[in-house]
Length: 473
Image (cartoon, rainbow, N blue to C red; front, side):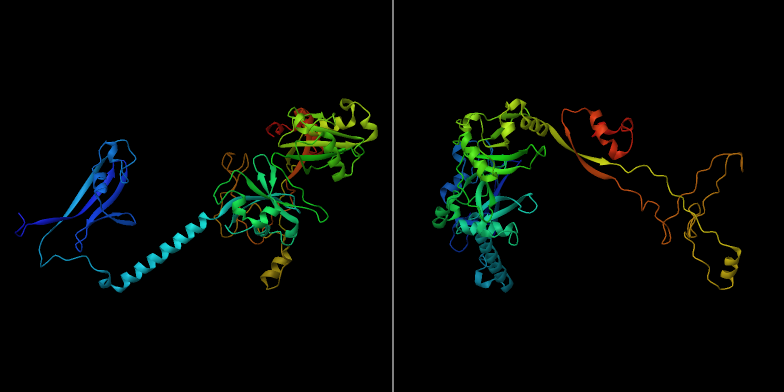
């Protein structure tokens, strides 16, 4: 039946591929201009072919697992068919572009501009090498963490300059005394330095294996002294924290970072320590901190560090004392100081303020002459506190009178009135009250709680048996 007023033609098919849980919508729409079908799938429009039609059948057959099918093992497609009645006098073609309103054309132009801008931005983002950047601030000594995005065309020196700028070190250290190294944040280790000669020819992106959002390593901006020269770091090197033991002051100095190689011997390490700290190699003892909280003596100068089980990072103690060097290490003063150091812990203890009696607010009594003078227009002396502590302010609700036992109604107790709100003339009774303070206490981890209490007596100014709340520390 091709003639008559009730002849319809199919011009659109809305398809849902998936299941009731989820899926994807797309549409097949027929062009009235060329009588061909097109697939409208999100932002893409393409001509329809037979393979696309087969993909719409759905069902469990694996042959139907096409571009538009869902992720589920068995799926069925749902369809919505759209028809229009054929009437040559009323049927209209799709509106051509030149007949679109001006505001629609401008909106299309703006949408395309935004799409192109988004495409360029995404392409730029894909070209960036994104790293976590670390550095030890030369003034505060704190470990600083920032983020750095390295552009695709930058060489190594450009990247160092950008890292120097991000860390805001312009007024602290010149960029010529900085370099970037591979850093393992988990192990807190400087892993490998970049070859300056290689970085002059290749871009930094090529040196790190291409642009990515994630790398297996971080970057560390290392700084050197003015008279110091950077040394190359090979992968698998050791990151040491050197602590000098001073037997004269009986103290262990703060740790200083130092780089070593696993192929070094103990003697080579001693020579490097001597060069950095000025200690004598002939009378130098080295000891490494172990997991058992003790110092293990590095006694054999010919042993390689890897044979001493030194990997990644370690804490090394160094001491150069001729008299102590001649003693067996277990009996040396150096070993005793190391034992105290590795077995000590630092506690932050909050010391409460000492108990203080509450101050009582009083008023200055007015004489009869002062009250008479005020009534006659004169000026009386200002009271030290205008509002008595036990009386309500003039604009507050009057509290019920307080009666003492045996007075008033049978001696029953009545709650005292609420304190009046503060006024401009009120005095802050806690203004000069001493504040609590926090102190640092270093103590041997093998000490008892009573030892800690006895140590804190002088700070709290109370007998140790009164410190019943210390077990909560």
